[in-house]
Structures are given as C-alpha cells and as structure tokens.
Amino acid sequence: MAHGPERRPRRTVAVVVTFNRLPLVQRLVARLGEVDGLDEVLVVDNCSTDGTGAWLAATPTTGELSVLSRTLDRNKGGAGGFHDGLGWAIDRDADLVWLMDDDGLPERDCLLTLLEHDYDFWGPIVVDEDCPDDLVFPVRPPGSATALRTVAQVRAKAREGVLADIVIPFNGVLVTRELVDRIGLPREEFFIWGDDVEYLWRAREAGARVATVTDAVVKHPSVGELGSPMVFGLTTYNHSPSALKHYCMARNNLVNLRDYRGPLHAIAFVVKTIWFYTFTRPSLTRLRLSAHAMWDGLAGEYDGHERFLT
Image (cartoon, rainbow, N blue to C red; front, side):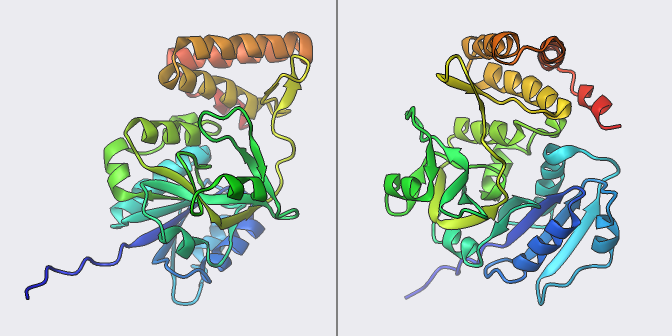
C-alpha cells in the first residue's frame, strides 16, 4: 500500500524582545535552553544601554540550541521589536513562532504542552512568579462580564484544558506561519501598549482559531493592580504614572476601538478618559496629554511618543 510523504516536524522558533533588562533576558535565554521542542531562539534588542548588546554579541550558549540576536538602530518598543522579530523568524523558515517579552519565564514543559494542541494563535496562562496561584493578567472570556483572576478559576472554566477564543498575546504565545501570511506583522508604529491587542483582534477578524491552554504556564513578575477604579467602583481605567505609557495607551487604544469596535466604543473611551482626569483623579496636564495622544492617533501620526524617550 502506497503512503504519502511524511509531514516534516514543524520548525518552532522563539522570539524574545528585550530592552535594558539584562539579568532577565539572561535568565530567559538560559531557560529556553532547557525547553524541549524548540529549534532556535531569536533575540531582538531594542538598543539597550545596560550591556545587553555586548552580552548578546558574545553569542550566549544554551547547550545545543542556536541563539541568534540583532540590535535595532533605535528603541522601537515592544511593537517594533515583535514586528522585526516575527518577520525575522518567518524569514528563517519558522512554521511556528513563540513570542515573549524578556520578563517572562516559561515552565520547562510549557512549549510541549502548547504543542499538544493545534490552533492558529494560542498561548499559556501567565501567573505571578511570587504568587503562582494568581494570574498576572486577568482573563475575561468573550461574552462574560467577570474577569478570571486565579489559576483555579481559569481551569474551572476550561474545557479539556482549553479556554477558547481568548489569549494573552505576546507572553509565550504561539502563532503559525500561515496566520502571519494572512494578517501580516504587528503594528510597529504603536511602540508600546495595544499592539498585542490589535494583533489579537486582527487575528480574530481573519477567522483565526484562538485559545489559552490552561496547563501551559509562564511565570511573570507582578504588574500590580491593573486598572484604577472609577465611577464609584463600577469600572476601571488604565492609569499609569508614566507619561510615555499613558500617551501610547490613549493613542493606540482609541485607534483600536475605532478600527475594531466602532465609533461608539471609541467615543465611550474618550468620555471615560475625560471623566477619570476630571473627577476621579483630576489633572489638567493629563487631559491635555490625552487629547494630544488621541488626536495624533486619529490623524495617523505615530511619532509623538518619541519626545518622552529623551
């Protein structure tokens, strides 16, 4: 009986984006050398000034695993780093690309657990490295008004170890070459904040199969309480002390809502921002910064964040 040609194993390449966190990227690269199922590691350095470039240039070794690196000519943020790194991985004939920031630390069996499943865009749960029963990034299943905040809650909602239609992007997520061919690369002009959400929403709009595999785990430092309460605790707002983060959040979030949720959601975000910085945490400076950021987003101007980088 004749048999067709055997399908070759899918080539899986990790892409790590780093900026000025040398101890964390060293820890992550060492861990990736202990992960089964990985063919290559690509590290994109956002023009770090803490010795990361020199360390990468020395070609860190992780056993038999190949580690390649490139240093960008300037800091392009997470968005630019993932845009460059994902394109680089595809150019190097990756079938699957495993995307992660430098501050994550996948469990040794994380990749093999993910590879037991077949989706277009799927990833692990992301837990607090100091409190591993808690999620770093709360998960809100589509159609649910309640965010899941613990590992137990997520696993209770999962079916056969999978929470369908949701993933926390760019924290140990796998993306297929086929999906990248269909939807392109992340929006590098976003710099930070919202580029991961935009890529997820773009993937969903293209019909991608999206999922979280609840037995696959990435540890991550705590980011504190996400969202500042407002309107008597009925909702929250993503306030950040950083002018850079706020500018990018206001600009990119408004663009994402306009493009994927429609004008009413975009207007609601503008109203929410005005309310927060008028009543919840009054700040004329933040109102002006928000207005500038939102205007830039609507006008398609994506270099305004650069004044915060000096």
